[in-house]
Every structure is written in C-alpha cells, then in structure tokens.
Length: 153
Image 1 (cartoon, one colour):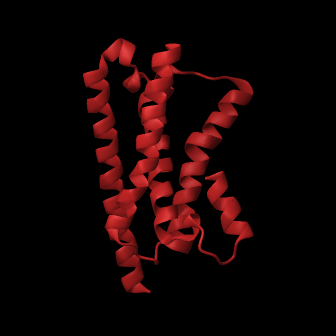
Image 2: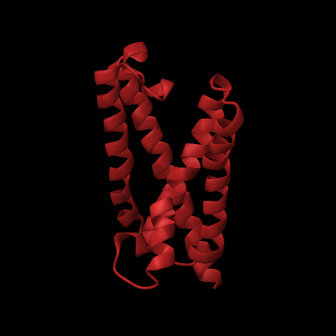
C-alpha cells in the first residue's frame, strides 16, 4: 500500500502499473483480506504488546479500512474489467509460494494455515486455494460495487 500511495502522490498522470484502476481495487481486496485473516486467525493466538501492538493495529486495521474508504470515495467509479483483475492474483500466488518455500528452509511459517510441517502440503494447498478463492470473490464484489457506483455517476 505504501508503494501505491507514494506513486499516487508523486505521479499525477502516467502509465505506471499502479495508475491503472485495477491496481487499487485489487490491492484493496488484498489488504482487506490481510486485515480479516489477522483478526480471525492470527490475533487470537498472538498478543503483541507496546509499540508492536500499535504497529500491528495500524497495519491490520487502520490501513485496510483507510484503503477501503479511499477506494470508495475516489476510485470506485472507475469500473474495471474483471479479467484484468485476475492478473493481480499473481502477487498473492508469488507471496504464498515464497512463504511456503522460506518456511521449508527455515522451519518458520508466519501463518499457521500455511505451516507445511504441521498441516502437510496437501492441507496447505487446500488452504491456499481457499484463500485465493476468497480473493476472487472479493474482487468480484468490488467489481460489482464499482460498476454500480460508476452507473450512478
């Protein structure tokens, strides 16, 4: 999100990948899922304190909500084609693959639902497919909301 908003501030016009309407819509879905997964799956088992707790709340609550509000008020009217948004699934695919690969090397998995050592590769693949499915549904919902808002404008 930092890269997106920096480019948004610095480049008023341009052809950057991040200036395309699908970028903020997809990133908003991803960061919303980050927030939801944190609050549903991780927060009950991890209790940070002090400064780490403040940073965690900013990252997992404030940033997702702020991104949603930004998208609704400033970008939702730019309806994007759904097929273009599917290309954005490369980011979470690469990230999930990296987490699994790194966990295999180090034995550390930051997310219990991707822990191959504890769950086995088959269950982790099922969990990953489920997460990607949620992302696709989220993208579809955002596409529908954006389409509705663009028709009202």
